Image 1 (cartoon, rainbow, N blue to C red):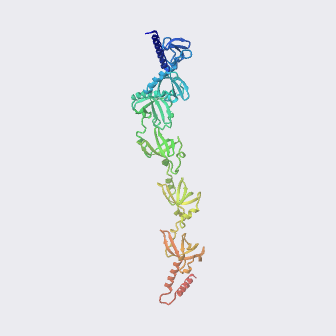
Image 2: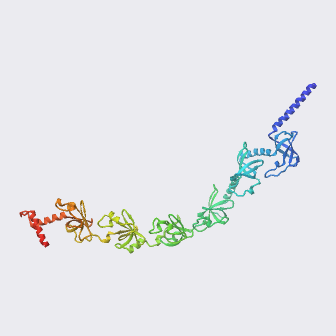
Image 3: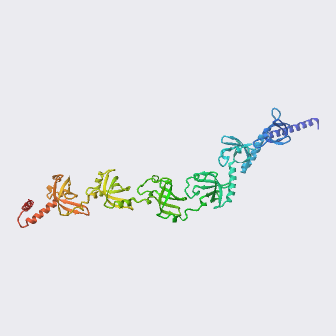
Length: 568
């Protein structure tokens, strides 16, 4: 080989080596490489990465949240190579970026495998906190810090603890983690283990942890149970704070365990004797007892007969006379009352009580004081289409039906003469205690004209006084009685020409014959025409015959003359 060829080969080897060197450099930039700490100067570490040059990395990059700065000469470290050579001829290195790259690879594996990762809460930001996951920074929302809201997060800061990755976006560099998920999982495991050691019917001690309107949560040593307000005591407990306080140690009985949801129901009253046992013998029907009003509702009032035993006075059993009144206007809370036992149901644990049964029935009292036929006085409370309602003695009401307002006039007409507030008298007709009804009559005050009619009967001759003149006839009053009648136009005279109502005047009197008198149907009718025909027949019978030859005028003349003589 000639010298020229040898020189050319040497150049080619050098070019290849140079190209290889530069190729390695290009591949190395932007990646994580290993280096040796060759010196430490003040706050910088000098690191040789094997590129015939060295780089400088600040010592603070080797420290971080939850870890100390621990590096010395000779240590092998991984760094991120940003540039092979800068203007000073040094490599540009970064330990933070190297750690971040390492963390992302490791975190992605943990995220895909749903594994927990270790991190350190090192700063508070809007809406939550920042967590260092060994170089990668994640966001911890405030709602994901703990199972329950916590006020002081100081004890959680700067301490390594497990987290669950909820979301990762490498392109944007976002990581969202949760501490709450880890706690819930741990708690679920603990609860499962604790629940397995508990049995229904077991009696244990617990500490009141929280109190709500519907009960209290009791800590049973790592797991909570609910003590419902109805299971605190046999008596009525309006709010758990009446009996319990937070931090109080209580003895409870496990009523029920739901192994799927890990919910535990507790009871305190179950540790005491059931007051409902033998309740029927203790509180017999119709017996009277004293109790205290504990609660008032729209439909009645609850009365405590003894601790754990309550009965209900329904609003319909509170007063004989006060209807549609709120129970709060009859009794008051904490008031002591005497009640009667109406019904006892030990299965449903219900006792029906009566308040009005301890008082005299006002309808009984009224019937004793005012028997049928007695006269009473009352105020007109109401007018209806079927009669008047009067307020009577004993705070009871009586009704005067339209048909009992007047003997002769229609009730629809008579009722208009009364108004609310009027004091009127009436006769007691009937008292129905069971239906709580009192029937009264106003017309009975004056007696029944049909019963007092005396010898009045059909065919009798009566004297009538005109009280009203109408187109169809005249209204008259029968003298000597309280009865009235209507004489139709056709009954005013035998002769058609005289059947005119206008020939009569109010106050005028005339005789007429009774054509109908029915006591049962309460009807009476009188007729002038019937009287004239009867007198004519009588005259013919007395003063003439068919073969006498006398005219009707002669007969009537003779009869009238004889009648006049009798009158003289």
